[in-house]
Length: 258
Image 1 (cartoon, rainbow, N blue to C red):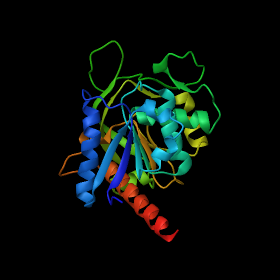
Image 2: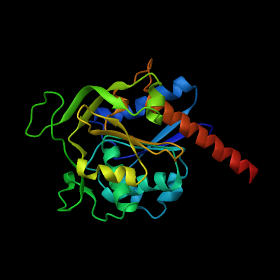
Image 3: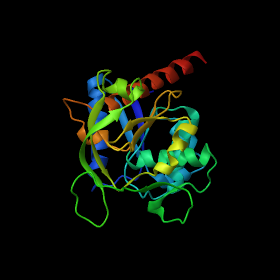
Image 4: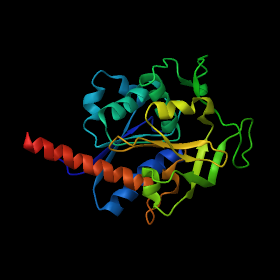
C-alpha cells in the first residue's frame, strides 16, 4: 500500500487554464514543505456520476473541488462535494468549487431542489450564485469580473481559516479570477446549513466558508493556488494537505486494527 497522500481533484482538467496547473503545483509545494509524498488525480465530473463513485472517492485522503465551471457534469460535481460533506472527508473548494459547494448545501441540506448558478441559465427561481456585481480590478469586457489580487479580505476572528494564516492576521490579500459570486439574498443558507462565513470582501461580500464540525471543510471564492510558490506554499493548501495526511494515516491505522 502506498504511503503517499492521495488527493482527488474534482473537475475537468483543461491544460489551457492557469488555475488547473496551479492546483497541482500548489499541492506539490505543500507536500514538500510537509515532507510527505503526494499523489493527485483529476476526476472528470462526468465520471463522478458513475454508481461506483463512492468506492472511487474512498481511495483518496482529500478532495479538492477545482475552478473551471461550467463543468461537463453539474450532477457529477455536486455528487463529489456531497460525498465529502456527508462522509466527512477533508475538502477544499476554490472559485467554482466554492460556488458549487453552496449549491450542494442548498439542494441536499436545505432541500432547495432547484438551487442553481446563473451560469447555467436554468430559469430557476433560486439562484444562489449570480454574476459579479462590481469589478474589483479594471478588466475589460461586457460583464464585471473579480480578477487579480484583492487586498483586505477580512478573516473572522477565531475561525479555522484565520488560524491557517496566523492568529495575528485580520486581513489578507488573495487572487481571484471569477465571473460569479454568492447572491447575498442566500447568505442565510450558509449558516442554516452549518457552514458559517469566515472571510468577507470590502463591502461584506462572502469570500469563504468553513465547517466547524467537519474534519476539514473549507471553500473560498479566491484561488489560493494562484499565489502558492515553492518557497511559500499557501497556508490554506498546507492545512488541507496536512488534514488529508492525518486522515490517510487514521484510515490506515484503523484498517490494521480490523
